[in-house]
Amino acid sequence: MEFKNNHKLVSICVCNFNMGFSIYKSLSSVCNQLNDDFEVLVIDDGSNDNSVEELTKLKKKYKNFNFYKYSRNSKRPLGMTRNISIEHANGKYVVLHIDADDLWENGIVEWCNKAIKISKKFNDEIFIS
Image (cartoon, rainbow, N blue to C red; front, side):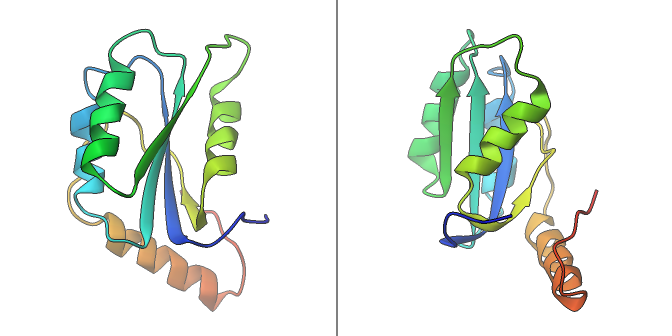
């Protein structure tokens, strides 16, 4: 996969649809752990709740956070929305499957660093699930 640029080492990509009730707390639990090597980006898939307001608060609070609002398309499956998030990613590595209602304890940076070491050891792009 070709990356647009490598301003960041890791892009954490999140999809959102109407998770305004949990997204601020969830993504704060991620963003509070990160350093400048990371970015968090969210694809909002046409939410009609308070998600955009919550995402705007997160963008104001965290310099490594961004979101993109898309119009709702019921024919666009979640996998396609994840692919859109990858297209917006600036990192060399991408983390998927962090959901807008997950709460994360400390350890994301360390986990990503270990996955990167494994990738480098095998001189290959890898998928870790």
